[in-house]
Length: 194
Image (cartoon, rainbow, N blue to C red; front, side):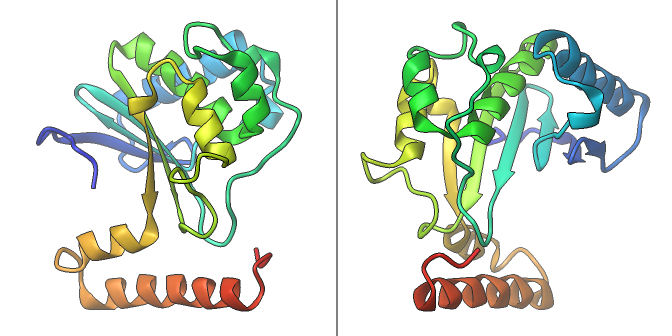
């Protein structure tokens, strides 16, 4: 679904924990914590990492993943996340209210700079809950605030399902499809279901 230019995945981190523990993954984790503490002034007890981090030889990819809910919106976006080098319009980033996306964009760009890699932010969810096609969505406002908006992408669960159908075991595909269809049905019957 995302173009790795046929690169091998070096590691995948789930909430900051490496799938394959190595000396390099420990260093990555330490560097991520250092950036959170020193550059973004976060307290260790409040660390929260992106849902998934994928590291290749030339890219660092953060994924903010949603299933039942959409993105979290809040009027409280800390100024320490809003660095001029990552945004062309800081006020628009604030108005987007996309706290998690702003936070991930800033932290991801910082760690990618440290490793001299390209940064990509993915937002995965249901089209009913997140949407870039509508000019009036918070996500669109967030995208328009970015210095490099081409490195922000939304992936929809339906597209993911169609892409993986022939590449995973039937039981896994059927389970994912069942869960997604259940959520979509709940959303039809109760639009505020989360």
